[in-house]
Image 1 (spheres, rainbow, N blue to C red):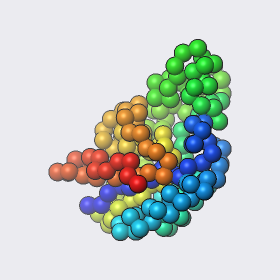
Image 2: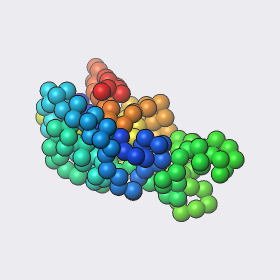
Image 3: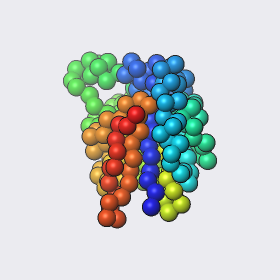
Image 4: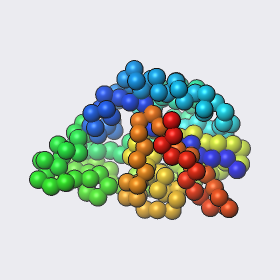
Length: 193
């Protein structure tokens, strides 16, 4: 049975500064491009039945530089919609609220244009996982996307609730492997580079 390989896009200006980035489509920094190229030999040793990428430029370019040929662009792999917090850092949001804020605990944008809830993201990634599971007998499935959505997806793979994605930090340009042990979903590698 194949694995699911989750790959976070390479470094962008906003991932470097800690700004929340969902709908803003930023290019990779040179460091992000270099990191993606470094993954090509490692990922090239796997046999992929499918490679699904987020429609955002940073994810598509990461896949390309990592030697992965996208078999589908999947809208369900977009990053958590931060609503009015798009482009802002956790520190800025916390200062505005006068208390510590966390995407894993708090509403995305209380009292403003709402973003997406973690439960919404959980439902999206459950659909992605259901489709991916159908292909694992044919090889691995690569999912090239964004930090928070991939962390929620990992939590759901393991049977955890979406906020448990907080346990799976995934740096820009790193990947993880979701596999099986004795027929159960497990995490077989994480934060690999």
